Length: 397
Image (cartoon, rainbow, N blue to C red; front, side, top):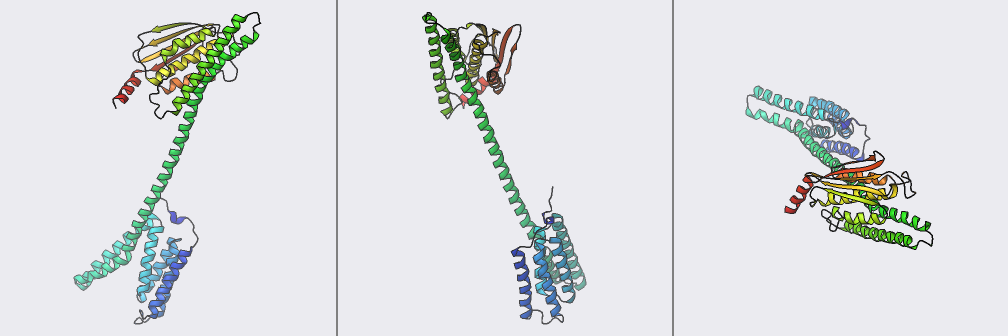
């Protein structure tokens, strides 16, 4: 949509005053040098040139007013003269009106100047029956058409530069927004990793440290077992924390080395069994290599599900890993109950479920979790066929 920026009220600037002064001074100098001495109305010609000079100073800030005043002064000048100074000043007025006036005004001036030029040229040739009479039309084109054309060209370059500047600012704002979103996504990912690495192991440590404190001195075997579980959880948590920090420091995270996956689930099962959770693990289908992101997400979801079963279950859980042609489905079911004394509504209890849902969503999978028939079930499906193809394509590249 076109904007008539000339319609915005503006105050006269120092440049406008200098333009008017230069025009009036030039007209006065030409008069002193005798440019109008052969004209019977040389005094009036200086007056019209002065008015045209004032109009030239107004055209930049008030294009309609300046153009109207200049056209009137030029018309009177042509009627009684004409004088060179007024004609030159009017060409400057036309140029400024084309640059700073409404776009429609610029087009109208161009059409009027062109029609007048053609009309005068044809009229002169018909009147004088000489080709040389066309010179009048050429001179008129220099005064009426050329200034408007140059003003339009200058305006187009100015508007194009302004549009490019706005576009560059928009691109910079979008880049900044993308950077903020990337930082937010990275912080969310880091929070999810830290929760999986730290919170799960600390939860097991909290459960067994509470149990160890409640044991009497006459039960050294149970206390030693609890301390062993605490140490094992602390060591594994520290190792996984170091691994996460290592992954964050890597420049290429497309194929992180040493990432945990479903092959590490048996070790995870042994760990939670030491914490007192009996896990019945089932594998359906033929295990196969998975994309790194899918493999790690499946492990983290299994870890979070089993940790929740330790904290809020009744000491047993069933876990099934189903390798399907185009996806891997992980299901963990445990009876509902409380063994740790930590209620399910405690602060942060739902953070693990949110993190599992985010992991599945980022990979284009589905996630469901909820109570059914006195048991709590977590089921997640992660697509693998497309991801495997992408990884193979990346390897070929």
